[in-house]
Length: 249
Image 1: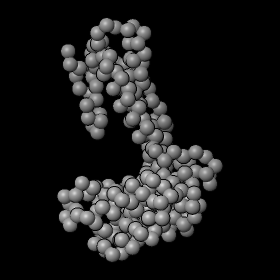
Image 2: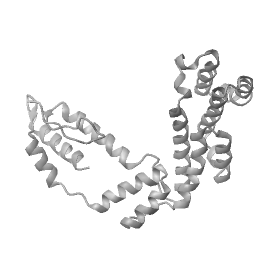
Image 3: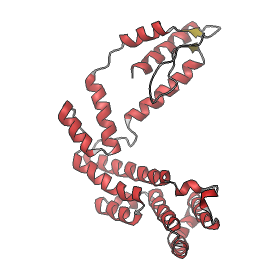
Image 4: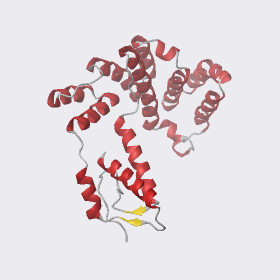
């Protein structure tokens, strides 16, 4: 977070000065600014807790709360309910996931046709993955085609999914990513977001489905890109390591 504010302050200074060429900021000056920014440990703990809750790490939430005293806006039981739905999706057992969602709150799928379509689409993908061709065609025709007739984007997604059946070797087809585990995770994330929103309404507070840590990282990348155009400074090249590289002179 301190890096973000250093970048914002530097951008503001450069905007005021409006230099004709890029400003050079030494590593010494940059680190001095970083050292002057203080972030409370409590705020960092809240950021970590928000990530753990949003991503569904129930055991970690309980341990982190015990170790740091940081409160969570959501009960561990509610997190476990959410993850009990996500796990079947991640494993490809979509029917079980749909049943669990309806047990948790039937309004989630009733009021979210896009989510329900994507779950049904994932069911179709799993049938194709398991080479149940006739069952896949029947399922697509009976369950998905009627929804495609009502929604153009659904129809396009259905046609794209069914086209997997055209290829004998799906490893070489242009839409093979539909069979990747990442597709399951994408669907699971959508389910997670919908349940999180539903649980937030039950608790009468707003809980974003995107962890604050993710949002902060996006803001940091944006600020760095903006500063790149106006200055040479110790920028972050690899965000996974968060190490500063020396400015090119």
